Image 1 (cartoon, rainbow, N blue to C red):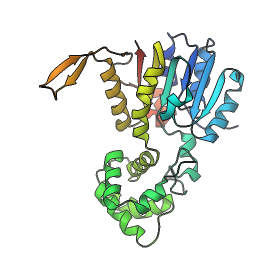
Image 2 (image 1 turned 90 degrees about the vertical axis):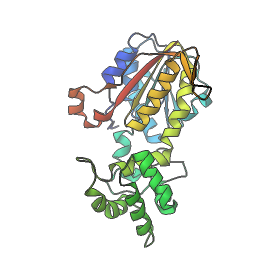
Image 3 (image 1 turned 135 degrees about the vertical axis):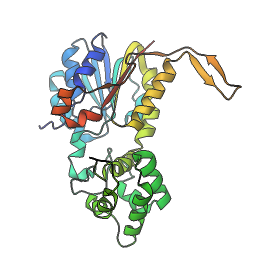
Image 4 (image 1 turned 180 degrees about the vertical axis):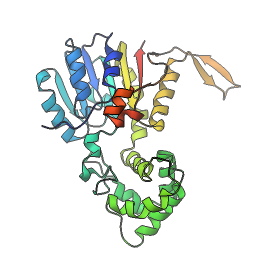
Amino acid sequence: METPHTSVLLREILAAFQDVTIKTFVDCTLGAGGHAEALLSHHPEIEHFYGIDQDPLARQIAAERLKPWQGKVTFLAGNFRKLESFSLPGIDGMLIDLGVSSMQLDRAEKGFSFSKLGPLDMRMDPTASLTAAEIVNTYSERELGDIFRNYGEEKQWRLAARLIVEARENHPLATTLDLDKILTYRLKAKSKKGLHPLTLIFQALRIAVNDELGAIEDVLPQALHALNPGGKLAVISFHSLEDRLVKNFFRYEADDKEDTSGLAGLFRDKEPSLDLWTRKAVVAAPDEIEQNPRSRSAKLRVIQKR
């Protein structure tokens, strides 16, 4: 079976876990199993490897790829934001790759890519109810603008929202081509240099459909709680909104002070729950970027639980 996805920061992930004896590992975003394959190969001591993914095709592809370790690997269907619901045992290592895989982007029927004709879907979980089509056809101009501004950091958010509302008065917007026709030309004049005018619009819609930022906020404290002392958590993010959430959570949990500015500007002592294994985000090396341009925006942050 074809495995079209190229796992990013693979060397860096292996380096992050090389000093940890891993009995139980959780890959919260299994995808096509690239990271899982590398980790299982480099850590023969792993007894239980749990792979979580909400996409049934991803689980199918990963199952084929990970057949050599089928006695160790358990595939779990669902969103990582419900990590605690899986009731997993003490965890020595965990990975959360927040990127949308090329396997998703390249499937026209998912509607993630403006370069491919497909329905305005964008659901990572095909059983979820909310689609991009529902958002663009039913949300108010103000709600659309908020999505484009907050989730895409699109400077022309007002214009994009207005153009969509005007266009849908004539007919419902059903495909990626519909958005292309009404937005690309009008947004092109002021779009960021080198960036397709629809890049941030599609990013924003995808985040809204899947509540991606809410999922990050939900999973991080659950992940930290599930780790054994000395266990490591690695998170790969792909844009500033994701990385900001991860960075702020890790920094707060690593700090021995708590800001109580609402109480006369005092700082209260607290016990740090983790150590920052990476002080700054780790990015892809030039050779990886050359081979896989999608790795250019990847950022890795790693912590170790106290």
